[in-house]
Image 1: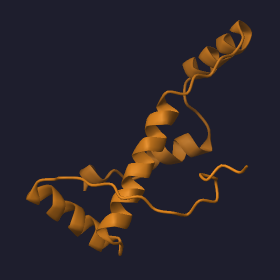
Image 2: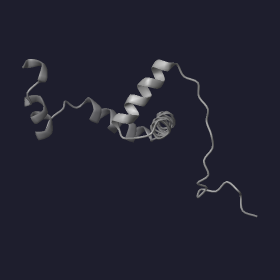
Image 3: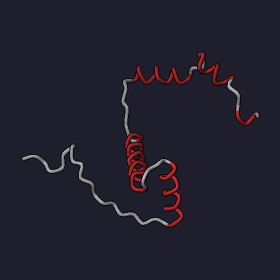
Image 4: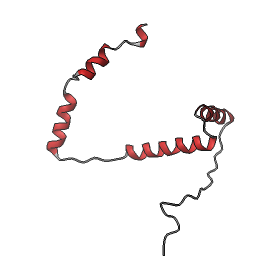
Length: 95
């Protein structure tokens, strides 16, 4: 028997939140600036925050030799065309 909650389940579920008026106004302004409804804006923001939270907990395990090589690369001074271009770019605060 198939599970009633499948990956193709498009049914929506209510989530009720109570927020202060100033926060709701801020959310409404941001949603309007992005051409979204309040609900769409909040859903997108909550989904991104949830994904980031879970990704921050990701554990990457490597063998000692790979870890040592990783540390070596981190200790190298920055270089290359991209780095030189970045360092020579005009700084907005120098104007």
